[in-house]
View 1 (cartoon, rainbow, N blue to C red):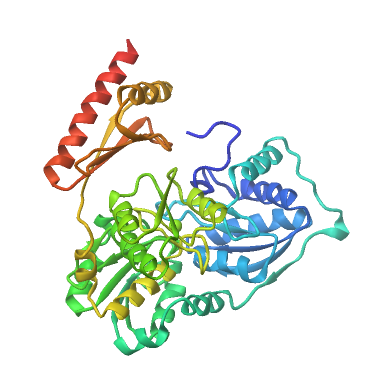
View 2 (view 1 turned 135 degrees about the horizontal axis):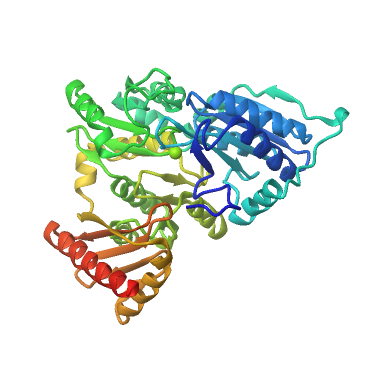
Length: 458
Ligand code: MG
C-alpha cells in the first residue's frame, strides 16, 4: 500500500483507468513532471490499452502547460521509446503503460535522459511538486509545443540488428511464433525477425486494448496457446511478450515453456564466454543457476533488490553490460540498460544459430534446479518486526539481507523470504536440486514464519 504522499510504485504510477488513474489526475501529473523537467523536451508514447490515448493526451496537455515541448511517438513498445531517448537525446520521456497488469489498469512511467526510469530521489521531487501543488505554469506565449516523432520503431529494430550476427541467423530460416498479447510487441518484433530471415507467425497479433487473446502477463497459465501452436506448426522457437514488450518468455521447439531464469542463464553463459570477467546484475529473487553460470564462466555476479529499475540503475553505476530477472526481463547494456523483449529474442536466435543447437538442448545443458513458492499472511504492522526476528533466527547461516532474507545452504538449495510490497503477506521462493527438498524448504519456513508471526501478535 502506498503512503498518501506517494504516486510512484515499484515501476511507475499505476491504477485502474478512470477510477484510480483519471484524465484529470494525468493532466496534473503531466504538469508536475513538466515542472520537474523545467521547460525541457520530452518524448511521449503509449501502449495499446483502451485508456492509453486518452491518458497520453492528458499528460501532454499538462507538460505543454508548464512550457515543456513534446515529441509524440504514439503507440510503441516501451523499450523502443526508451531507445528513442538514447537516440534523440531529449531531456526525458513519459510512457503511458501498465506493462503486465490486467486490461483495466494503466500507468505513467517517467524516464530520465539516460533512457532509465527516474531514481527514487527524482520520483520524490515529482511527488513533492504534485502534492504541494507547486506546478509552475508557463505564460501564454511560452506554452510548449507538440509534434510527431516518426521512425522510432524502425530506428529501434535497426539498432538491435547491430548486436547480433544477422547473416548467420538469416541462413537458418528459423520458424518463430510470436505472441505479443494483442499489444505493442506486435509493432516491432514480427518485422524485425522477418528481416532476420525468419518465418514469423503471430498469435494474438491484432492490436486490441481489451486483451481478448490472453492476459498481458507472460505467466505459464497464459502461454498454453503459444506452447501448443509452436508444436503444431513445428516452429523452432516461440516467444511471448508482456503488455509493453519489455519482458519475454520463450517456448522451445517441443512446446516447453522456459522460465526467465533459464533464458537469462543461457544468455549469460554465452555472453561470459565472449566477455570473461564481466559483471552480471540480477535481483536476489533469481535462481542460484545464475550464480553457477557466473562461477563457471568467470563472471562476477552482483545481487540487487527486486525490481527492474534497481537492476538498470545498478548496471549503470557499476558499468555492467548484462542484467536479468526471473520473470523474463533481459537487460543488454551494449544496446540499452533496460528490459527489452525484442533484443532478448534476437540474442536467443543468435545463440541458437552460433551453436547450431535447438533451444531445448541449450536449456538442457544448464544446471537444473527445482523451484517451489509459498506465502504466509502477515499484518502490515508486523512485517518489519517479523523480518528482524527471522534474521536473528538465521544467525550463523549463509544469508543475504539485500531484500527480505535469503539463505543459501551447503547442498545448493536456497530460500528467499520477503514481505510483499502490495499485499499483507510474506512470499517464499525455495529452490533445490530435487523437487522434494524444495517443497520441504517451503513447508519448513512457512511453519517457522507462522509461529514467529503468532508469537509477535501476543
Ligand atoms: Mg513490461
